[in-house]
Image 1: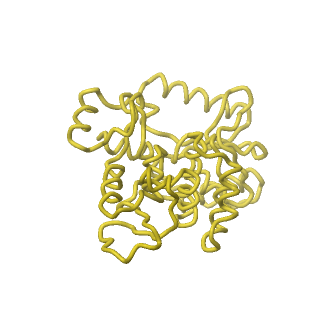
Image 2: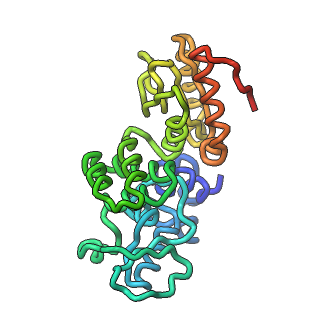
Image 3: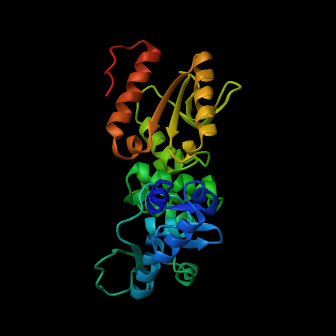
Length: 289
């Protein structure tokens, strides 16, 4: 698989080890030289959108913000932005914002010096303006990074401007650092919309281990399956045996691929609704596709 595609599927940001598990060192070096990926920090790489946003902020005299800022902070996202998001001071006169998503806002001195919105502000900005699954991906990643705390995020969301405040509070309340990546987060966002299903990320399944999402009451385990993880035969064998062990303990295991979560949300929701019906005896079941 093309290294740029792999990086996008990993959330737009990945460490060197993750990339070398699916490509060679020469392929990684070539991608860097060609500008297909950029170095964010030591042993950490990102999609080119990070450098594009920095250049746009410098050109406009603003700061990198919203989803572009999430990437700049090294957080994984559901989808990298098509255009850089830039915020400029409210006092600035109107300017040519072609090629960027331009926002007028109050900016602190530290944000102007760093040329990027601060971590908590970045999450709240995303939560106020993006669809729930995209915003939750940013929030989960921010908590996972340690740059943002749950308490600080909820407090900032509660004091956000009225427009988008309810959405920000919903995202802040649902955010969880246990989610490993945007793939798992997007699946959880869909599952949260299914009546009767109450999932937690990285929940325990008896003594077997953990599943990506777990409803301990219904005994349902939901797995986000990636080709990258199963690149080695040992990983494939391990998971097959683990799923068999879960089934022997009475768990119902549901598996989705990346394309399902990212592009077939209605299908995922339908499958999970069927699973709830099976577990609660509320048939009929929709069926397979």
